[in-house]
Length: 448
Image (cartoon, rainbow, N blue to C red; front, side, top):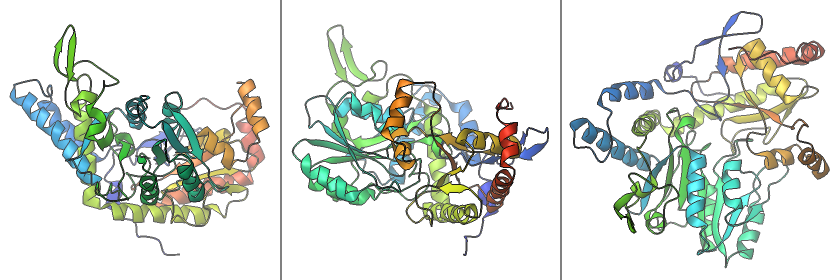
């Protein structure tokens, strides 16, 4: 198999890629970060932009000083840069800054589930908790099924769209699963949703940092009505996220968070809210976060998202092929290639609990992975084929350990040689399984 040639400049783009970390035996190794689906390190360009901006930082929107005006302009320019990155039409849509994807979805759930609109939310069985829980206490919710590999059933989607056509409010769907990496056909889903007079929200947290993304024009059946994503998953971990949607969604009604910056005029018995997006951004804005995200977007645009996707696909294919050589490894999702996924690979090793395996990789090899259910417990329960009776036992007994998986996830700075080190470690663990289990029966404290 031919793999995309690694560009060493990619590694130079991120902060801390070659940091040394301690192992359990006291030696130091170059850290390997395969936990990029959780969060990414900052780009060097992002950190430099933050440092360059810091002397000019001041209050936004209400100050008359030069620094305040400069900060305000950069903050608003960041919206334009981000809108362009996802091809959002700013004549119809607004870019609202939030803390992260979770806050964005909660804000939208508050907005759309007010009892006045269509009240059926159609979610899926593969969603992150953040695109499930915010809807549960506000609307009626139903879930589109997935197959045994974890892929969304388009047949079940259309079946449920037909069922709820007269009361459908919103289809909420992940762009790419944070568990299996599966990419959903979001534009096909959008076309179906619009056919049945609904709207679509795409959780882009795992998709937008890895592939080209296009909201499509307003008059296109493929148009994405709402999209949310987080900067900390795209090399700008400075506490900001994005909610993009129609201005008219936010024009009427009260915002969920109120206070400074959200109003036009106030008396003791009257409030006129500011126009969106300011109406939705209570308190002092995260200007540095916006500057950082805009810088990350510019870097990704310079690289070309097609190139990012191509390289990460190559890493994922390489990892899949190498992992198949490890005795006792069980892969989940598409085990053959990464044509329908982003750079995420979930797996388990026979006879070793997922938490123990993740600990061994960290303590023995300096390899950072994620383990557990990845804030998607219903999806992982399905993938692991856990009987409902066993799930019920865990509900009744909170002391029982949760099932789960180990997940590796790549960024553009990861290398094939890092995958080789992982594979070597997995082979060693498989060969000396009993010794490792004995050694880690009482899990050592995490090294700090």
